[in-house]
Amino acid sequence: MNKKLIEWVRVDDACEIQDDKIVSYHCTSNGTEELEYIISRLRKVYDAGGAVSKITIKSATSATRVTPELISGTKEALDSITIRAT
Image (cartoon, rainbow, N blue to C red; front, side, top):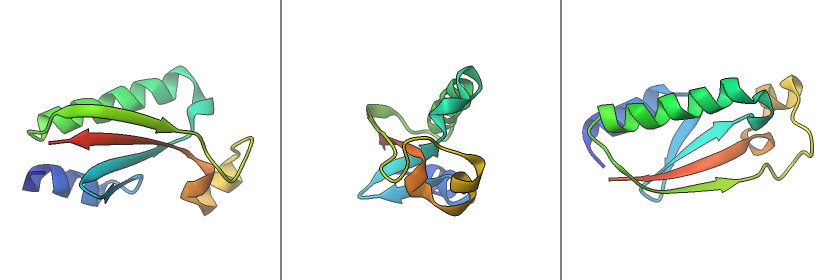
């Protein structure tokens, strides 16, 4: 993973790097708006010189319905998208 990609993840509070993968947290109940945000994140991976080789979507584990209160309190309340970027 290149330095530009690592820096992009570092400044984005909804992303983190785990085992050389980018994990991006989302509230998928926001529908089309959230989908467009996810697509913009994927574009940023490419803009930073990375490439996506795999995407894994994991449903939130600590809540059946995500609310703004849960979003502000814990990443576990959000769905996560793991992006394997090179």
